[in-house]
View 1 (tube, rainbow, N blue to C red):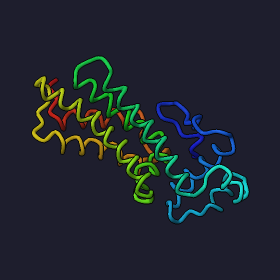
View 2: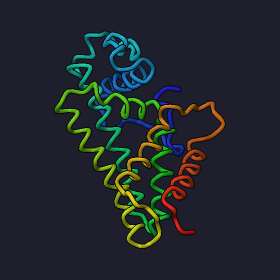
View 3: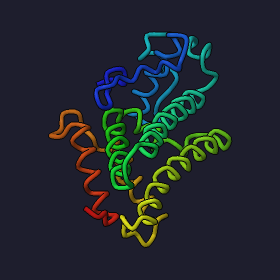
View 4: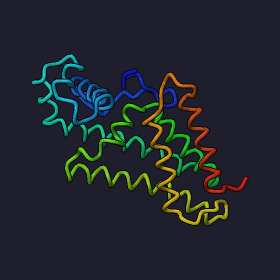
Length: 208
């Protein structure tokens, strides 16, 4: 399945932020190549070939292979962050909001597993400036989840001694779905999201 066909909760990944169409095609091709072969093993010729373009055409839209990775990483992290922030702003108590955050975050990482694999596991390939930008977005992801857990602890709904460590564990659990999820496997992204939401509520000792 290509990144153009991936879904998260039934929603396609159109990469509408990327224009013109040729640049979007190159970005989609880069996601597929990076996810399958890894960033370092992928050449600009590989990317251009997947997009049905000449290698020279790539440099019209992206100066370097790293610029492509940076663009993918930034857009991917921004989308994932919006998923978490939407759940954090939702109505309901901490347990409901944490369950929704985990369910949505996992569904995104499963439904967009090729994109998520690149976004989450190729960070070290970025240069210092680009890497710092992505790390800052990751910290915002952390803050969104940590805030919900802190609310639950303050309300007496969660039994958590180490909020920081628990936040890291929750995010790690969700993110790792991108590494192993298989569209031909026994569970859909929605089913995996529901399973993980239940596991995380048990992890924090949510009152029921």
